[in-house]
Amino acid sequence: MKNYKINISFSLLIFCVIFILSSCRKEIEVLPETSYGTLMFHLHTNADTNEVETYGDTMIMTGGRQIVVTTAQLYISEVKLAKIDGSLIDGPSQPVLKMQETEPYVLGNAPAGNYQSVKFNIGLNSSTNSSTPASSDLVLNRPDMWFDSTAVQPSGFVFVKFQGMIDTATVPSASNALIPFSYRIGTNSHLTGLLMPSQNFMILPNQESEVHIIIDYARLFDGVTLNMSSNLQVNTTSDNLSALATQIANNIPLMFSYEE
Image (cartoon, rainbow, N blue to C red; front, side):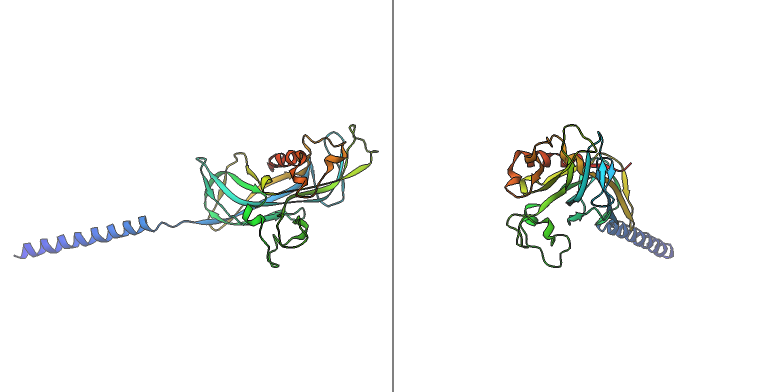
């Protein structure tokens, strides 16, 4: 009888250990922990190879054409992250307004891991584009980025705003007069999605991770005949229906490259 009791006790002990280990494994499987870091964009404002340090400076582009930039800003929204296998996951969705005088932007929390690229929109989705921003909204309550004169936005927001003066002559020269230009690109039809080229990066738990990007506004002139005065102005939603506006909007993905 004594040996029998010992065997029962030992079997009961083994059963309890197995039950506890099994319960621990089950808890780990059911409740996995996901780590997050902070995704940031570091964005440079360029006109060709020139970084726009101050509005109003005269810069010389490739080929000798002079340009003066007085405004260069745009909306970035709906960020997604491309994993190493190419699949996309949602990143921070809140829009940011990239302005010349600011380079680092905190986009928000993103799952920690290894990634090969980022995807984002230039502009705002249709719901946000027709919204009325609150007075406290520092990103959308920007009259300089409205097509309308009030916060009510039946015409929507300006997605890309690029203004200044440029040498429009067929043969650029330092002696040529600089002619004003103004491109205000928007409307739902010109919302532009962009997947950056592959360049691996990591988001580490509880740390800030930056993606460094150059935005070259001069690429908006690609395919545009500058010595035609009608090609220098896109300012209204009606103007955004033109072939010129479509050409400029199609150039938007060309503006973005990684900083080397």
